Length: 239
Length: 275
Image 1: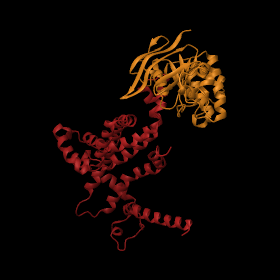
Image 2: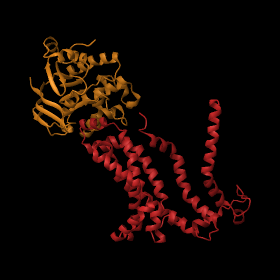
Image 3: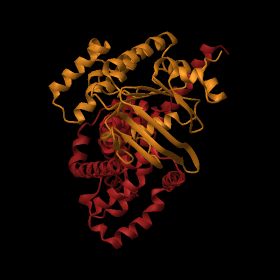
């Protein structure tokens, strides 16, 4: 297996605050990795560093073998699904989907065709002409996903994408995201504070606390052989 | 007192207040139409018996109002353009970055707003005269107005930018845009309404500006309508109907803009206040 994302000795400081402490993580191509931990543990910072929205203070970050430390987000070829979806309110669904293609100078007809293809797989075909404000929460979520997959990026980053959905839809979308991931053969990094989400969706779970990776491994490995009490609490469904 | 009675009382008070506030405007409109003898009649008449429409044409011709209004427009458009181009960038930075220096900057900007024009004009005049700016008096006035009204614009537009979620910009960055592109593609279209409203308010201020124009522009043919109106009045003025007709021609277009756009202006000013 090839390594799609590699982090070695990554540290991040905000002034005196040490947000990420000596992170070592390698993510294989095609795998689904969940970053889990309580709020403020650094999981979102780590994800944003992968996207290039935060710079890392020390260490190396490689995507598909290339050093990305000082590469701006637009040149990293990654896609991100935000917690708030971050759909452009002044653009229709189709314009939202094709925005990344239009920036890259893809011809209009080609972009439109790509949007239609993606919309067909995510069930948005009827909604291409609508604006985000005219969509339900679940539909917005689908648009955010579609916008990410339309340009076949090197990796997908998810920042708690399901936290704004109601419980039933959330369970449904978990399965859908995982299915999509398998079908696209994509590499995904998924941030969540929900242990169930992490344990059920991911191939590889990374448990974080206070900027440190406490343990990482396959879901069952963490469940059966937790490294410490924190991982136990993080990997077992709390009642 | 029951709720309905209370509401009625409030309404009556509001109407009386509005009437008091709008009375001068009403007086301007009817005086402009009165004849010379009717103007000075006691008791005063509240509706002109024989409207003198010819007054408008007479004032327009005799005072050369076309030129005055043109100068006002040049100054107002110049100021609005300068303020918008410079102020949008400034407001954006102040909206997106939070640190001590931004706070200090914001405080200084608000301080500038406190200083009255009549106080500022002396140092501005001296400075401009040393720089030779007084040879380009309208440009000098535009720059002076821009300096004075910029804080107001920046504070309003900053609030508009703060209402645009930062995640949208980040999404655009990840989608492959550079930050300049993200600003023009995403942030600017979403802040358009707020910027437009602020620009209109600035335009109305600049269109009626008096202190700087009066002090800086000596040449009559370059003076705006506000200064022209002032030169109309002297210690022995008695042609009130002409003055009122002048004022009517001057303010009616601004009033019309405001009435037409008032819904947008009010919603623009309060945008970002809720949600």
